[in-house]
Length: 55
Image (cartoon, rainbow, N blue to C red; front, top):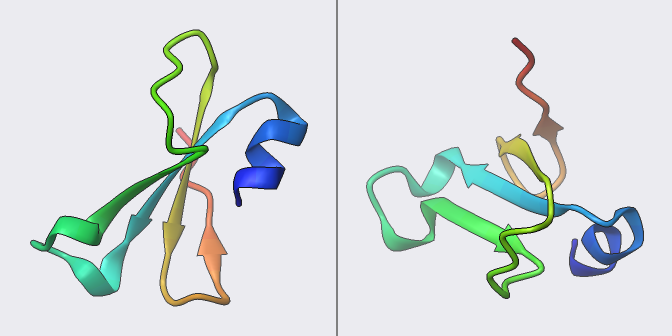
């Protein structure tokens, strides 16, 4: 995920539903705080399946 974020020039925010109400629920890739990068949100059902929420 870090390599994908760097390659696309975005910061990937992953919401892991299996960790709801736990510390690992929200993860960022790359993990450094870079406010100038756009954020793409993914929802993870497990480690193999990801969904992209759209408006």
